[in-house]
Every structure is written in structure tokens, then in C-alpha cells.
Length: 186
Image (tube, rainbow, N blue to C red; front, side):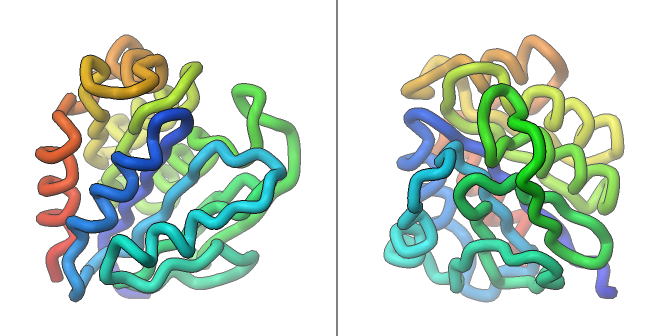
């Protein structure tokens, strides 16, 4: 398996626009695998289609056993946690985390455990505290933890929880999108 970077993005309420802005900033020749968890619950989701309208990368729902590839954006399917291993994507319909499935922390923690310093975690707008523990784990495993500035987030709970639980780098969304794009440059 090649040693390419992994970008893990988590968002919920108010997070669609920040995710879209990051997607738009990603380079056409993206040298990273990009994964997104959005609190969608069991409802059908058009997120892959929406993000494909705004970006240059192919966007698909993560599927069980899919090996990660650079230049692709994987979205957690409805009602399934998306986890990572060195082999690829694992989907889980187990216990809700922070009252939701899919949840952000399972992706962030599994990415950190499997890929350590190759991971950049991005916490965006949302209610509750999902993603905070995962960003802390990413940082502890040598990865880069970033969060949207809570002052500009439509729902600041998740970014504020990340700030309170660890030491993520706090950036306005435009700077955050540029930082992620530089990380993904092939």
C-alpha cells in the first residue's frame, strides 16, 4: 500500500457549506484520499451528488471493503459508521455514537489508529461534541487536527468542543479549505 495522506472531514448542522467550500478547493490531481462524515442519520442522502457538483474529484458513498485511492472523495452512507483500516473502508451499523450514526469520532479515531501522522482531521460546524475526541486522537497519533473557527460556524458546538478537548489548529473556513488543498496537492 502506498503511503498517501488521508483527509477525514466531519460536519453536521450548518456544515454543508463548509464541506462544499473544502471540496471546491481540492486540486484536480489530489494526492490524498478524502473521507466525509455528515450527520445524516438513516435518511437518504444526496451528499455525493451535491459535492460532485462543486468539486473536481469523483465522489461516492464508502462501501464495505473498498480500498482507499487518492483523488477520490468517500462519503459515509446513511445509518452506517465509516471506519478505516490499512485494508480500506469498513462500514458498521453498531451503536450510535453521540446519538448519531454515522458519527464523526469513529472515522477520526480509526483513521488515526491506522494511518497516524498521515492523517489530517477537519472538524466543522455542528451541534454536540462529535469529532472532538477524534481530533484529539489524530493529534496524539502525530496527525494534524484542524477545526473551523467556532465564531464563524453556523452551529459552533462541535468546533468549540474540539477546542475545549484538545489543541486543534483553529482556522476560518477559507483558510481551512486552502490548508487542506495544500495538504492534498499531488
